[in-house]
Amino acid sequence: MARYTYHCPLRWSDLDAFGHVNNARFLTLYEEARVALMFDAAREAGVTSLEQGVVIYRHEVDYLRPVGYGRPVRIDMWLEEIRPSRFVVAYELFDGEVVASRARSVCVPFDLAAGRPRRLSDAEREFLKPWLGPA
Image 1 (cartoon, rainbow, N blue to C red):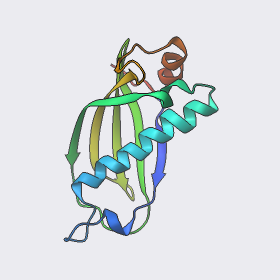
Image 2 (image 1 turned 30 degrees about the vertical axis):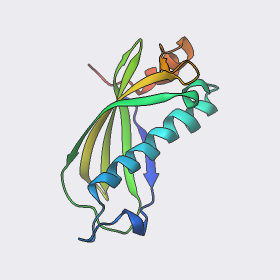
Image 3 (image 1 turned 120 degrees about the vertical axis):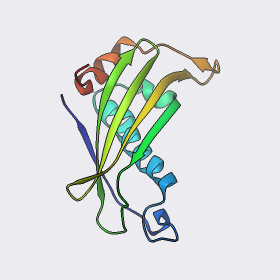
């Protein structure tokens, strides 16, 4: 299975009063990685429709260890599932070589003009397929 890897710098504002990355900021870090895949990598592959609307239906986050301020974190992503009107992104966030968090996001393609969910296009599905892990 192919993984999409994103290196995300930490900002001083990511820290909480205890000197480690705040739990809510993990979602922001995951979002940055997801946007890099669905906007930047997709655009390079000639697929721009994902940038026009994808909403989050659900997040699940497991916090395995605190992450302090310092070097960028590495986020590996893959897809657990692709369905006609949703896909599930899985993540691992590494602090150095240690997994500090795991997460999942259920993403729904969304027609912003119509204000409702839509189905994945064939081009979107083909773009996402290489990131699909084993069932």
